[in-house]
Image 1: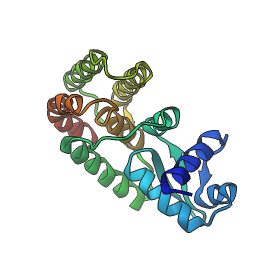
Image 2 (image 1 turned 90 degrees about the horizontal axis):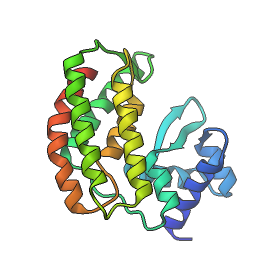
Image 3 (image 1 turned 90 degrees about the vertical axis):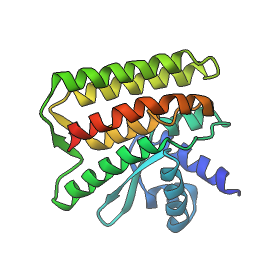
Length: 203
């Protein structure tokens, strides 16, 4: 079986399960060895299709991201490389999550709500949504997913306690929407403006 076929089966197993599965449970359902599943999950995480978190003594637990759900619906889906601005802000969030994990916390931090800052972020996100809406080359379902993730990000950033893992997932999706390379380039200026604003909130 080819690598992409195994990875699709892994996505299907995760999607069809009513519970969050760990590496060993996925391997058992696929009648495969856990090391092979771990390798494929690592690739899927790099592509933004799954999220992984360690579970004590049982390997990583895995769940689908928005992009993972899209990949299952559309067999021709190919993730594009996210703009460097997206990668930079995701690295900042990853660092925060790692710091919280080392201190025994989870991926939730407190933030002081700043209305002016939040208004600027909401305005930028709305402009990104309008840009994606105007692109006729994007599948309507993907446009709808984009709007859903954008709304989720706006709501999450308004909270006094931020779920960094969720923010990371949504930002990754918004910066790497399925479409054309031209659209990715057109989204880049918004991330140039958005990234430092979000950094102010999560630091």
